[in-house]
Length: 380
Image 1 (cartoon, rainbow, N blue to C red):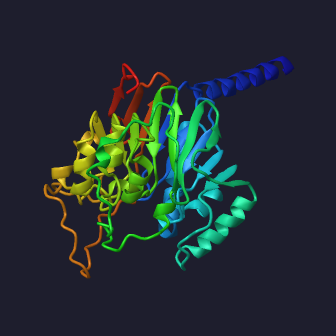
Image 2: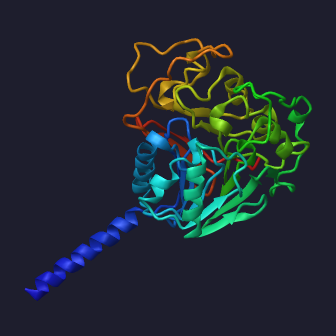
Image 3: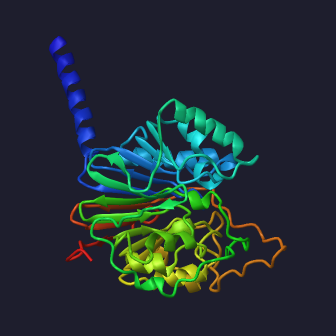
């Protein structure tokens, strides 16, 4: 009997080891998670170390977004967050933190420092953020420093309103798109004068895995893109660009997007947040772009400025008989816009699996459609 029990125990242990082995891979896996126009991205290294950038929405969306983030963690085979980078303290990027932290351990908190936009809608969240960070490791990001992420070179290129001063390795060439760059005095989305908000404080990351390179800058603004990338291109070329500010025209200038020449762009947009014609024209016309993937169909771009459906991860809860062709016109100043289409049902991520030679595969979680982008023949 003891021999039989021992055999069963050994078999069970072997099964556990086998499961652990199936979770091991040689790829850097990235999940761009649908948090309804907010942001949350999970990066998992071959050693299963994890970085989460942002924690989604608060309020009524907090439990929904925490469900979606933890689902991505389960798929990746991780049970804790080793490093949480909060790009800035707007509710669509940090609002879901408290709910998420009640479900999974967070080992390190990384942010830009004090909140520059206090107010009743965010103050309680920031108090809870401070309490959680005090119980773990916490540091304020500085441009040029690295995040210790095993097997991956993770560099901070912007934080707290400051940008990288020295070019990344292999970068530093003159940026030809700076000559025609025009600064914004008014935000083209909010129509408010440009100021010093939390968006301008965004923590931006450049991630290198062998020859594979990713850039994500949070809600980094149009004007700051020139501060970072003019007169020389301090970033260089990248393979994957996660569009800034959800794909809105208050970011994503030619001085950045065309200079970095992404092979693929992912847009973590909402049904009515990001994807406007002004920004889509710039993203589509980026030199060397092979594909653009969207987390949502955007009514702001319509069919006129969108991608084929296989590249879009999420529909609306109530399918429409036909998606509108023309972009949705913004409401006149002072007028009330109609409610955006809801999407609180099943959500799908876009997953990227990258190899050290620069080859990477992008997969749409909704339909399983995937495309592999072979390693570039040479560093551009």
